[in-house]
Picture 1 (cartoon, rainbow, N blue to C red):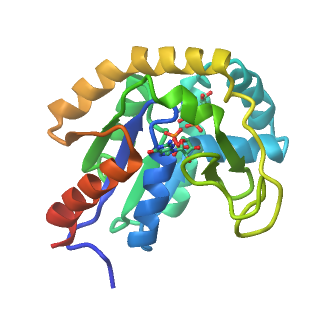
Picture 2 (picture 1 turned 60 degrees about the horizontal axis):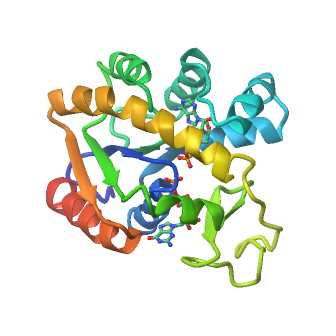
Picture 3 (picture 1 turned 90 degrees about the horizontal axis):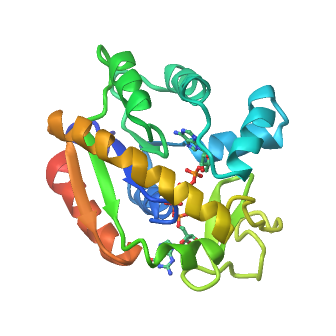
Length: 225
Ligand SMILES: Nc1nc2c(ncn2[C@@H]2O[C@H](COP(=O)(O)OP(=O)(O)O)[C@@H](O)[C@H]2O)c(=O)[nH]1
Ligand SMILES: Nc1ncnc2c1ncn2[C@@H]1O[C@H](COP(=O)(O)OP(=O)(O)O)[C@@H](O)[C@H]1O
């Protein structure tokens, strides 16, 4: 039995550290039948298994550069083709993040379960560097922690597996500034594209605990009831 009256096909747009992964995990706790796809997590898994794409990507990621559109689009399109059904509800985190990726995805899903909601997480960019510097991750699962906001039960240890947490190579002050610059450069055309499709919403808040209730209510009002 689906949680939804109509399928939720959501893209979360947001600067690095704005809380896309955090909102995703909160939504998955509320709606278990949503397929969550995080481009960053998929890339980090490729890097961990030392695939060709992983070896290529690790250089770009370490320098805060975007992976070339054709490579990331192939990875995500193959994943979607394998996992999506015509009635799927899904959540995209981190892809698309350029207008070319957005247009390509829109064309490839034209006959199928295309995006029906794009939410921009509008967070004061002065607060996100501190978040990034305190972010620790469990690479295997993509679980995200923060020394201030959501620390693990046991220091530097994943709550579920007990495995050690790690810092992302791109979560440094200097690399972060490059990622933020690239996000800000790509955001305008993407927002215009989805605004023209009539599916863009912007939710503001300087804490994920302010944003999530607004996001959950929007979904409840428009996709559940
Ligand atoms: N202080 C604080 N940290 C947060 C908040 N929301 C998320 N974080 C943490 O900030 C970091 C970035 O969040 P994440 O969800 O990974 O952002 P993403 O890069 O957009 O996916 C992580 O360490 C989160 O645990 C918040 O409202 N306040
Ligand atoms: N859609 C994408 N296009 C190009 N590169 C991507 C994409 N998604 C992720 N990446 C690469 O992976 C890195 C980490 O992505 P992600 O985990 O989404 O980080 P963030 O915390 O910035 O949201 C990005 O800085 C970029 O190098």
